[in-house]
Length: 354
Image (cartoon, rainbow, N blue to C red; front, top):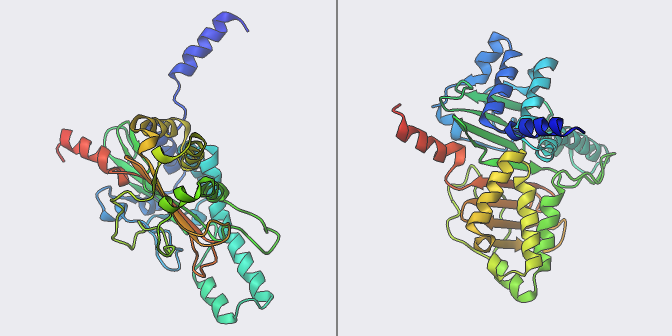
């Protein structure tokens, strides 16, 4: 290729932002809004100051109704546009996890139907499950404020085992808290047997704890029962303040590499630019300052829990399940002090009167 063309390409690429910028998210959201009818716009549009913006849940809609517009009610054109918004928000990894969790609801319905037909569960249990209303379409979109590059706005995409909370203030983007879960963690019956949507969150966690020697394991493992859910779940007022477990400075180089593999499995759900910013923050504060704690079994498909607690982030993973079968994952990634854009909003409000 001619040198002049290469130079032009270099200049173009150097000025190009790869996804998840405030501008690209603003454009993708406005494009989605342009596909909606006036009635749909009224459904999806909510006041940015509404206190519901900072509430979240991972429960199915049979247990917790949502605000906004139901994904399943959208036209095909609007669905396509919203998928483009998701691919702007996430890396391919994050996008596929999100959409696979949605699809897993339909798989879950098949699993329970098959279990019922095989007389593995009684009729009353099957009817209770059906009332939970799991479905690929039962996810809701809410847009808080008007997407723009001057005033704060946000987006929530939420349903069973998904809570995505986007906050934007001018050119600043926050995507925390970010909750992803799977039930089942591993499908064991039907044609989908073996399917594991959040496989590496589980595998890398087990790889790390089992890479520790006995002395390290004793330090890392907390002597308590596996929580029935992540500790920072919406119904729990408890927040994790103290550091527990083993400090990364006490790990070997290989163990630190595994720890970073596990952290990246969460952060690399974000688009390229945002994930690199967060990873740079971790590098600046130092991997040695991160703590890793474990509760429960060191084996797959048995109840366990871990937390990765750093100076500027928390990752929680819980795999207990309602039957304590170690086959139901809840996970969350949070940027400390910036849930629902708290930090970037504080800076904005200090500079601008509202």
